[in-house]
Amino acid sequence: MMYISKGAILLAYGRDRIVVNRCGCDHILNGDMAEAWLDGRFDVATTREERMTQAIQRLEGMGLVEMSEDETDITRYRLLQNCVICPARQTAPRAMLGPKERCVWKWIKGAGFKLRISELVLLAEKGVKPDPSLFGKNNWQTLVDMIYTTETIFDGILDTNMERSPARSVTADAVLGLLHKKRILLV
Image (cartoon, rainbow, N blue to C red; front, side, top):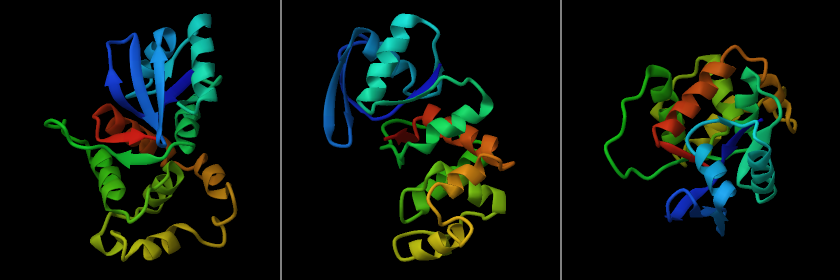
């Protein structure tokens, strides 16, 4: 089983007890649930242990993880589909970014709305470079019009089409790299 955690830690009392906030709701996690959530906090985690699988299923019911029984390359993309990608507050010096991570980071920081993984994959597939003329609240409509056309506007079509994109894996890896480097958090 593969999974990734959603939300942000408010308080931590070691690995055995944490308080996680997601969408304005605080959740107190203890024991296996705290450990499982922490394992999926900065990267896709896997488990085969029955006790951890049960904890992850309870976390999924609370909306604190995205999980999948599959363990394939496409699963990383699918786990990110139901996550909102948000810039994290800078708290310390940050690790250097690779070229693809830097490009995705510019999109996440610059767009006038929260970009989803499928939208980031589409921009990468089309070779659209992050440009100030597409950034900010004044230009968000231009960016939306670039992403959503008559072929991609229908519900779920963009997510499905981007599963087959040659840019899917590289973009998902860049987003997960930003998560690992604490530049973003998933909600």
